[in-house]
Amino acid sequence: MDHGENNITVVDEDGNEQLCEVLFTFDSEEFGKSYVLYYPAGADDNDDEDIEILASAFIPSEDNQDGELMPIETDEEWDLIEEMLNTFLDEEEE
Image (tube, rainbow, N blue to C red; front, top):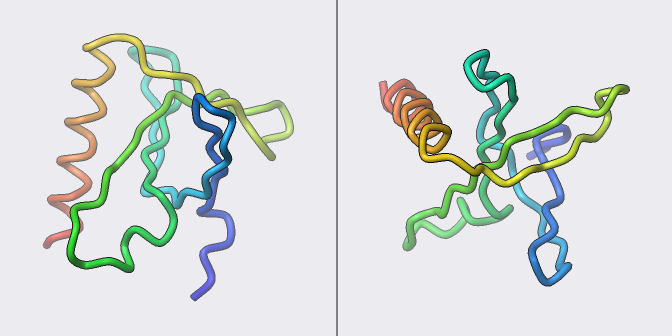
């Protein structure tokens, strides 16, 4: 199974790199940012536990190759992300 472009490397507070799979991305005109939702790679191989879905604001670089992940700072942004995630999951189930 080839995921190709759907992987990102996330660096945690301790400087550890973790490969994650991108669930989906979306843009918000309201906040003027892009967002990416992702989860640790391989987490979907384990059916026993719930997958922890993570989210970050995303600033694409000028060449669109890489970008910078930024923490989400406001409750309004979290509310928007939760809404988008619920919509995405509902569509996946249908």
